[in-house]
Image (tube, rainbow, N blue to C red; front, side, top):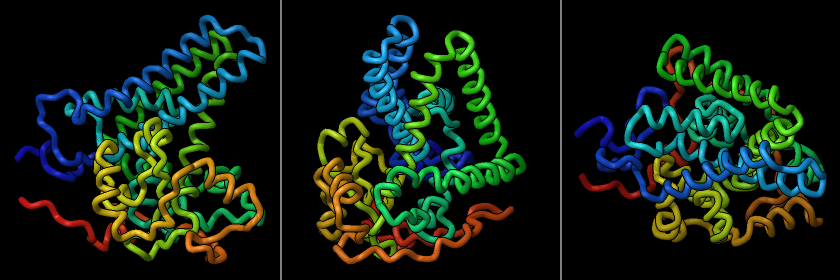
Length: 344
């Protein structure tokens, strides 16, 4: 068996290939045609906005809103790419990460430390830089709005620390991170030179929205869940429309139990493997309805079972890697091993 066809093998840059596909294909899963189309549509939209959009507020405002949502899809595609690469060829995945960097406004490689190695391996513990106990406003709407800002220094610190570690231990990761960073800065500088107002409206603001949105999803999908349970550690948003556009990102329990599973397989896996064991209250049929009920209407911050949410002490982040590499996983979704194993 070749390395690329091996199930769940780390590629050396911290990214895993999952459930191997025939190496003759360009795409590992045909469903990623949707990913390419939506991300390609975002680039086409930005190009049209730079070339033709009148700078009338009544025109600009809806264009900025649509562009923000498109950039958020770039962040979701980034999340998917660092778990399950799109292409069979490594060089195409590296190029795709550069493309996603420009849609998301953040080097894709730097997404890996805080998300894959901290959050997934140590969910909701002191080693999770994105744990929801850091959201501590009394009025829950403020947690929705400012959770990302409140943990931004922790995320940045994790990225910088891991980049220093990788510079000594993972040269391939370091080269890829450097390429993504240089291209992003160069493209942004070029767009600012062409038209700084359009660059701000149609690139910088959408990038900021994408970063806010993808981190805030962590709050929506984990706050008030049971991190000690192998089945009830995540909240799922199962509406068909939101999942079509976000590449099934709403199916979060199965994602933590099997992070390398391709997004197109998540609904069936959720139905077959998760739903029979999970508390049904963690299946939310509507994301907007959940946000309205939880963050806007009276009722306070609660656990999924209706009991009041009692926050743990925020505390300082604990190290999740050393000079020898990432520490062993502590998250129950990783250690419980509750999913059936595939027969050899």
